[in-house]
Image 1: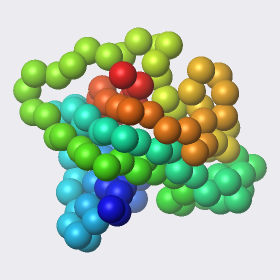
Image 2: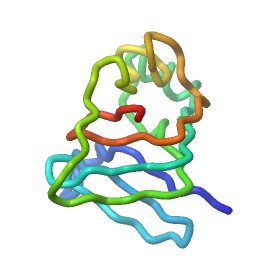
Image 3: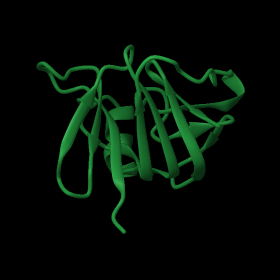
Amino acid sequence: MKSIKVRFNLGRGQNYMKWKIVYPSGAVEYCSPSSVQLVMKDCKLKNNPKVALKIFEGSNKTVCSWVLCKEIQVKFGSFDQCDSQDNRITYNPRKAPNWVFGGENADGKEFKQITSVDYGLYKN
């Protein structure tokens, strides 16, 4: 079974700063982080370390990371509160050329569930 691919869209245009969800069928959905909550199940953090290292060293940003998941729920309205800093998963190749969880390199790490809260991702 192919995975759903989720990433943060930094490309200029109408979908700038939105979550981009690419389904196995090829369908694409963009979601505003302030109006939805993504609940992703059976997840894996993916990163292209060569591209991330170039960004870390000063190159222009380009797509190099995403979350793969088997299921996704896009919630509107009542959101789960899961924004404890202890459970935060971060990715900023300007600060570190890899996913970070618990202060450690989390590239390739798998999680049963990851939930978005605004622009942040959290382990449940």
